[in-house]
Length: 336
Ligand SMILES: [Zn+2]
Image (cartoon, rainbow, N blue to C red; front, side):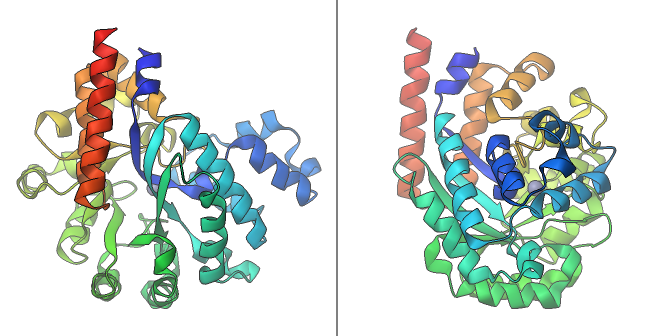
């Protein structure tokens, strides 16, 4: 089954570039910045990526980002991430990146975007990566608006959307209403992390105030039947990240994850890895777990990938190409 899942052409809609750095590449940056004695070994680096709870995960995320200091580091990681995605037959990606986290190191969002695009371009023949700028809610909407306008200057580098990640448990979505309105006027698509570290009300806020195109995570929708009805009726896409939610303690274990109910109730849900190298996950691992623990079939997995394609922000022609490639591989797999 794993071979079949590997062969399927896959899409990722909720992937953070800085959480997808292959660990050997991150280790090279740790060496570059003379931090080997602080970290210890590659094995000890891996062990740091285990979390007591969601705030601890955010703390670790920020620690890891201290090893990204120069524009060339972003070119390097972008190329490494793209190579890693292509090797997994992931063919289309909408990847978050968080320019604001690096402002304190004196890096400008525009140049940082250019550096990332340069790295992604190396593998552009194998994997398409569109970028989504995370305006990081911890910094507040005023700062978010400034970053939005800077990002708008480099939209041509394949930045198609914006989102807000960060500490959802401390920063609700509503104050970002004007930022999201401006983003729409500028032609960006929108997503917001919601219902991950906060409750269903955070998802309502993202829908009503931010008018998001997609919801990141959306786990806590399961607590609110009216919200579930709304998500189904409007077919608002949910970017589910099951293993991430287990690793950060958002759900106690995979059996408690609501993706099965979302899928059975006809919500437009896709499967994504969030920060795969920080959660020891991959799309194949996610699908395998859904098959083994939540009763999904191979057909269901293909349907989930199709949901991802339908939820993507590329044009209709690209979507139909992705569907065609998926269906022809699916048929090939079934014939064998
Ligand atoms: Zn995320």
